[in-house]
Image 1 (cartoon, one colour):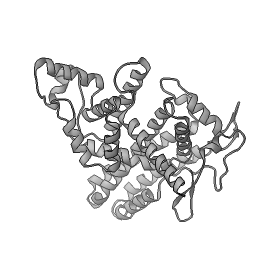
Image 2 (cartoon, helix red, strand yellow):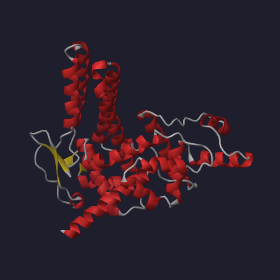
Image 3 (cartoon, helix red, strand yellow):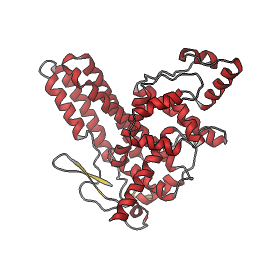
Image 4 (cartoon, helix red, strand yellow):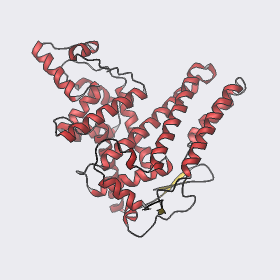
Length: 365
């Protein structure tokens, strides 16, 4: 779908068929501006306007600093928007680039390691903009928490900050799934379509639908205090499931029987790697210990372990990247254990469910 900003500040989407991307000759047709990176959604803009209305009468200098920071974000977006659109043909310095060639490159790239130099400049710089925006909203959250007249909006700014973090995480997951050759080509092409639209606008509808699912999982997880007893995670999973919606329950029922998904779930719940879980289980069995406290995990494993359930969004993202990198290493080295993260498996499931709903809807029509 291609996004357009309308005069009433609402964002609408026009349907876009992925096969149009793959047709050799056809550029993508569109109306309106080619590039339209969204600096702030209507909701975010309303939040900021409300903050100014409340704070400016008593703290003009602080508001001036906030306006300056917002201006910097807008200038950054303006610079990124001047880069060639990812949705049209462009004669670059040495090559012809089309949406088709970008999708082909994404699908055929099986290299390991950091792929930043293989991605378009707009994708890399846009990710930097998103991080700068996250930092901005994080700062506004802190300001709201310590300013009495803004306390009522602190949770709203925090929620928006976390939501953007999951947009960042979802982008990483999409790249992982695109490179997975075990998935059908049509599925990977759909993922590429979503990525191109995200990179072009930084506010894609598919990502916007999936990020809240990941956020709900994180919100439930951070309320848990893993009990390192049998190391089965049954009680934790039950407590987590009670707080979740039907999508999560269906995912658990249909996919948890898969050994790798079960292992990825344990990594997510306990906050330690598959290898560390296996080692800890062996220690507990050999010593005849039925349960240990969370503070004892580091002593038993002989290394500092951060398993605090009350992680902030930055710690959660860091722990995700550790699980992601461990999974990639196992896959590359053909080692036992999960070759994907729980987020990978969950996002794959959500997209498959959405695809099934669309197909059923089309058949009904």
